[in-house]
Length: 169
Image (cartoon, rainbow, N blue to C red; front, top):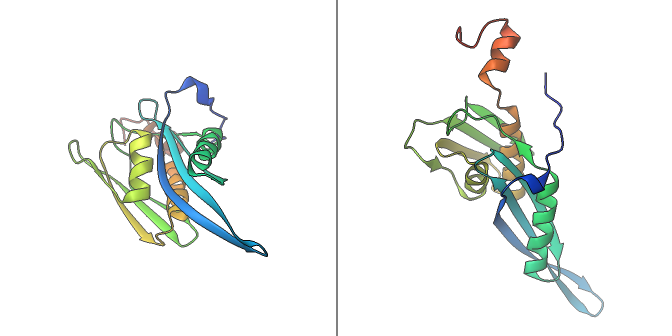
């Protein structure tokens, strides 16, 4: 049973932002080319295991980043972690993007590529093994990573579903 995600208040966290990608976009019009920028941003509070992503578009890069940060603050999610890693192996999917997250022992660090690494460090996950399969489009990779993070379950929840105590697992 997926739990209903309640809206998290961005003001109650010490959010750090990280720009994942900036894309220069041109639109050809009668008078020439209109230039604009699209920014993909991840924000998170590592101490609270809260992370979100957003994209912003504007005529200048700093404005696009600012809009991306505001958008990311609106869709924050809390992640279930065990100490400093993910509780179990999980595969997230979005479009043709697949992201595999595997728990890692203490001292391993974040083994991840660009877009996935930004999400992991922003979420406060210190030890994890990841593999990005399929597309390399940062938008789809980030959405697949968030899908995987949302699928993470707590030990107590799994035990309750099975009708056991968490010590029995």
